[in-house]
Length: 131
Image 1 (cartoon, rainbow, N blue to C red):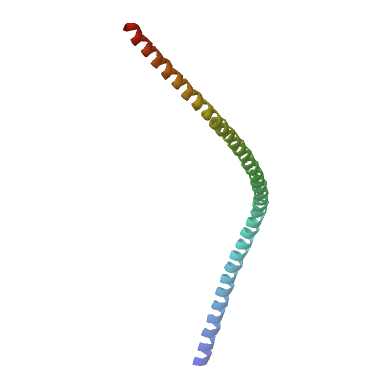
Image 2: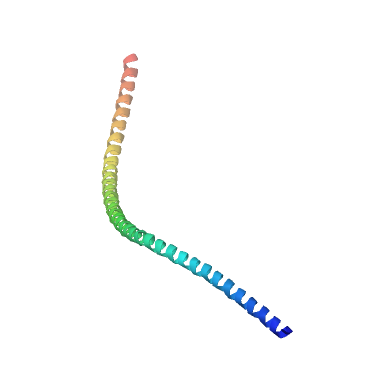
């Protein structure tokens, strides 16, 4: 046997060892990929109900939002009506007050003048009585 035969034998042994190692690691890679595939299937099975639940929740939130919008519009309408009625009552009160104040002030002035006249009359009458 010469050197080339020995080197050739070593090369064949090294290639065989590399092939065995490659088969071993490919087996590990295939096993890892199968595990990942199984986990992805499990996740996809669990995601389907989650997606359905999320869709249902989204629909309910849309209905609640629409209902809240409707109720908010109704509340705004009621507040506007109440505001209009309060403004009407305040305008009526102002009209009554302005009409009442003018009449009452005139009446009070007249009563004050009558009171002053009677007071002056009594004071003059008492002075004449004392003299």
